[in-house]
Amino acid sequence: MSLLRSVLAVSVLASSMQMTEAAVTAAGLPTTGRCTAANFGGSDGLAAVIPSASLKTQLGAITVTKGTNTATLSFTGAQSLFGSDNIGNLTGANEKRVFETIWRCDENSVSGSAWTTISTLDGSLRAVASGAATRSFVDSFTGVTPVNSKYWYIAMALVASSDSPAAIGAKDLVPSFSDAATFTTAQNTFFSSTTDTSPTWSDPRVASVSFLPVQNLAISSSNGFGAGTTVTAAMGGASVGYTLTATIDATLVSSPTYVWTSSNLPTGLTATANANQLTVSGSFTTPGVF
Image (cartoon, rainbow, N blue to C red; front, side, top):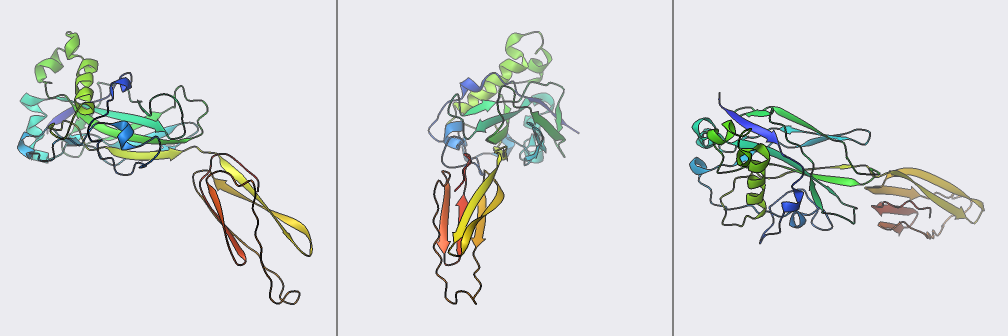
């Protein structure tokens, strides 16, 4: 059984990302704001790919497990995209290192690069061409204080077309053959690519995790019969969907009229009135009482 030599990519080269004529297609990313494919860069490369000549690989879908200020990303490691049709271009006499790389974007940050490489170099990882092993990467949010936003991830596998068994064998002796140097070549190829470039990278895998604080949304209601009441509901900052329903005893008012008035509504939320119901929806990050 052939093996793909795979390493998690070094984190110091995020600055090499460049904008090109068409950003890579990354299904699942936001289309507006900070964490878009356009801000990531790269491209899909040449669409007409001949499998027997291809260096393309693939990764499995990412799942994210949220911890205390950590996020564990799990996915199936790199394997040849076209199976037996192109595994020979990546193994054996044509063996190449496959760099499994993870980037992160903080959708609410206002400083620094939108996308930052967070994966590290680990030459001990290997992926099997048929039935690749499960990968697990823990994002400890190093340097991020506080961890209180929504974070997006892109994972890709990158290959340098110039890599070879000879280069792999000499990687600890010749600086230009090292994992870091070869990864730089692979990453630069992707981020400088156009739609005329033969792809040496996998399609992106996308995931996200939210550490937005759960806010208490306090809603005070009043009526013509006396003191008002306050309803408090715990709602995640990423998404809100809550409906208040007012009920009046028909023996007191046979045909009541309902008037809903809101103030100090947190940015991003809307309140929609419909007869005896008020629906609050949208997303917010700043707490408020209205």
